[in-house]
Amino acid sequence: MREDRTINQKLNSIEKTEKPNLSPINQSILKIWGPSHLQGNINISGAKNSALPAMAATILSSGVCRLRQIPCLADINTMGKVLSALGAKIKHNGNTLDIDASILNTTEAPYELVRQLRASFFAIGPILAKWGKAHVPLPGGCAIGARPVDLHVKGLEALGAEVHIEHGMVNAYISGSKTRLQGAKIVLGYPSVGATETLMMAATLAEGKTIIENSAQEPEVEDLANLCIAMGANISGAGTKTIEISGVPKLHAVDYTIIPDRIEAGTFLIAATITNSEITISPVVPKHLSAVISKLESVGVKIQQETSDSLRILPGESLKCTDIETQPYPGFPTDMQAPFMALLSICSGTSTVTETVFENRMRHVSELNRMGADIQVKGNTATIQGVPKLSAAPVIGTDLRASAALILAALAAEGETTFQGIHHLSRGYEQIEVKLQKLGVKLQRVDSVER
Image (cartoon, rainbow, N blue to C red; front, top):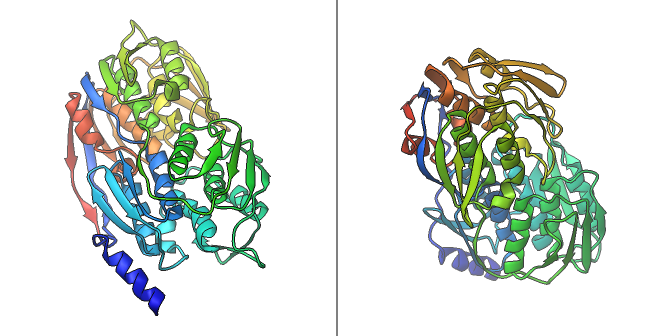
């Protein structure tokens, strides 16, 4: 009872958390009139794929964590609901989140929320490390292919956890007389971003040293490591194939700003290329965009680094074909595959795009073909024969990046494109309609909801 009173006093000291808002499905459509010509400067939001694990990492802290440059997105809202359901208190002020997840009411994440967002599964590592047990449903998210949690489970078992999967629930706990996870050497069978982040967070509070080999090298992994280091963790090697973590007893509060979203930045660079336009984007980390910049330059545009954190794209005389194969970072990112295919559909010559990361990430092809593209898919490879122009058509987005591809195609297409799937865009692109309008795109949202 005394512990309950202490918990209540602590929670009441934080401003009241907003209750989960189970809103109706958004069936709104977006009308875009093309072809567009873009001009101006665009502010790139904080990285969604950094923000989500950063929110999960606050569970490790013994105090209130302030996270800055958090984009206002549906996925961020869902992650906030997951943390709130666990007992965390969240204060949202623009692009800043104050999160107190130092004390949880439960170690079981709710299925109805986790099924909406795969990234919410990241919470299993911090919960288990901090509280000794965790119950998290198998995750959901975009239907772009199988993304099993085997690597997460095997890694947690290597750290000394007992893990059982029953009725769609992953139950993990520290067994025996141990009160903390134990450091271990973990070799990932694939450099999974999610598994790397889950195990890195879990290892921060483990007893002893953990080595993660064949770890993901994505900038978001390094950003998460930097956040944990700022909280007092002992981590080295993040951003390389080998990460070492020496466990500490506890982590403290932090004030941290996450990195810019390289996928949003790449999307706007493609938007300028596909419309033969000149724009400036900032803030960015140019190094994070190396693979995308290289491919854009190969199709015929020029990209200049204006300042340390801004890029300017200049149109070329013509656009020519190129070949792409998605790979883990520093290779070409799978999240840019669909948007880049929209561009390749109007590049002269024959291009090929090979998807090696997810097996079901070509569902945008049929919709691009409806707009006049000439794309054939065999297995995991698409062959794109460039066409002179695209034509407007009614199209439907099937996932986040497929939706971005269709919006990009609409910018270059002649006529009025009606796009359905705004709810997908709201998962990963902050205020995309406002940003496009700022660049000169003529568009209109027609709202309608299905209850």
